[in-house]
Image (cartoon, rainbow over all chains, first blue to last red; front, side, top):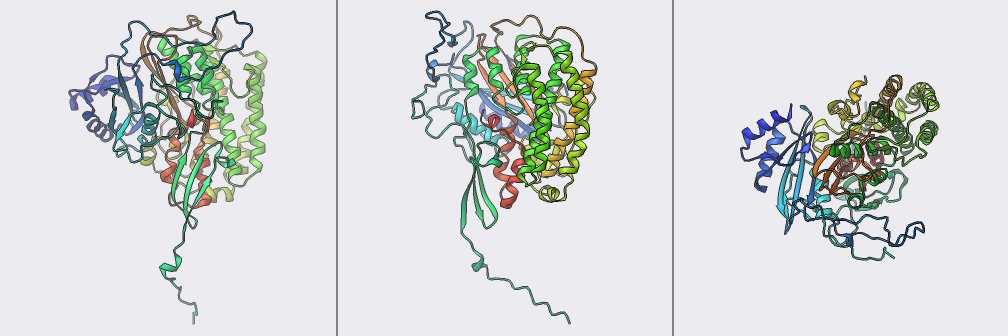
Length: 188
Length: 379
């Protein structure tokens, strides 16, 4: 199934779902209009041979990453001239639309048709939450926990939305662009 | 007269036993790294299993946001350190898509050879350690003898034995020498009969078959719902291989089969991997036979690349499954967002459900058959 055929099928069922302005290269990318569309879309995907939920993740669009989120030590390289830094500092790019929002991403894959569709949904950062797909796809379980842990996205209806990768004492969500590292006993 | 006594049914109350909580790991050798599973057992049956991961979390996705694209290739080695070549490859494919760089035929062929060699090395490690997990110590020695040869070949081509950084943006680090090609051909000729030896050692060993056949059965529907990939998915009989369905680096030009399991048991997953080694040998032979001449590095890759704002996704059939990279750029010198679709992480998630109802002795059989690398689970 080509990307256009998949999109024709999707728009026949969900007329409000449109092609995303920024396409993931070589793959069909669609954008949901609101988070109420997600569950009907996922149910349709499961029923119409897109039976594998490959990925659940998101991008924080707030801006360039805050350098205070990293543990950095002075570089003692004696060959560097004074004042030179071998490390990259994050910097904003002119023209990129940074905004206080997160772009969520789900990837559905059809094992039978070997077709893949990228589904995006942009939500404001404050109190962000989306419906959980665990009742439909078991693979959503840990990936939603990962997105919760690293990006701070709540998933409504998840049976066990707890930390998965970071230690219990870590405060904040490291993949958020404004994450600031708080020193703990392992930093010394 | 048959004088067999009636089987006595004991009163249920007398059989009630206390539930016991035991920790498997995080330092247990058969967890293949630092995985902890909190098991609640009733007698010998598991009633609850809670995998606990994150001991090896290094935050590479965040580290990538303050490194340039060439530096990120170094980070990729540290995910799946048992098969690092596919990690290098998948990041380079995604970044090349983002930058619009086209690789040369020789670079593609060298990438394929290296990835397939690494697949063999990784499956040999699985073959050896899975035998150890189930009490067969001998296969390990044979598997490591051959794996050592592959690592020596890698050392000869790029200087490293585990974290290669060999596949670079736009091509590969350096060309291989005629001597290397000769030795690789010799290794392939040496390795082919060894595969039959492995079958006699472990695959058709009755004790091994009893421990693994019919244990940890994953149905095709379950496998798809858990989004398993690689030999774990194909062991359940689902025909999906990224090299066939979404070919990259010229895999469409090679003739190879996709081994499938029948029942989805631990033995099927094991058998898929052993068969995959044969297919990898076939691919390496073909790739060496028709290795094209020409440059090994494409022109047009900047020293500090600044791809235009955009998004790209690339995925490869790694040793453990469908390894994918989602890469977004805001036009800067570092990736704006790097997400790893890590097959070990996703395959491991089924453990919490599949372990329930199994016997304690089968836990290691199932855990070993999933073939995880904790560096990739935690990233």
